[in-house]
Image 1 (cartoon, helix red, strand yellow):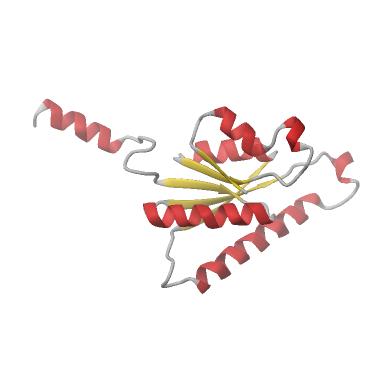
Image 2 (tube, one colour):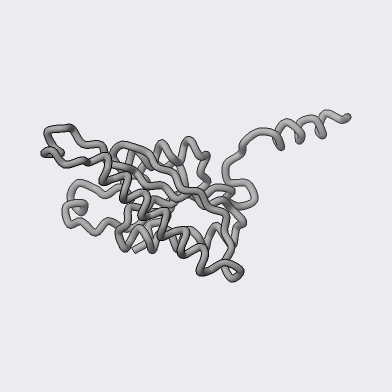
Length: 159
């Protein structure tokens, strides 16, 4: 075996981000209209690139005082279950027409750090998120802006 061949073999076994198109596309979903549009856009990218679509819901963690007695964990679990159900239904409707490999993941924490953790753990080649619909984010910065500024992956922000 030549030295060049051995070098190629070592590279083929290791992880290399962004070679020959994305292999994993992470899309942040939270049930909002813009996040669902982002998921649909990411699904199209994943289909065309033959990549895995990793749909990520970040369950917010609130202190017990902030929750005011509301069962926050149960509510966020229900949201995650509803999201998975919506995705499965859409996938079934499009079966045979629009095929894409997908996984659903939940992470806990604030949306920015949760998506960063998800993208790192899933070895994402690209991240797709919906544009923030909250007015306050124009001042303090949205999750999308913070992801773009992190500069760790190509980030697509879907309006």
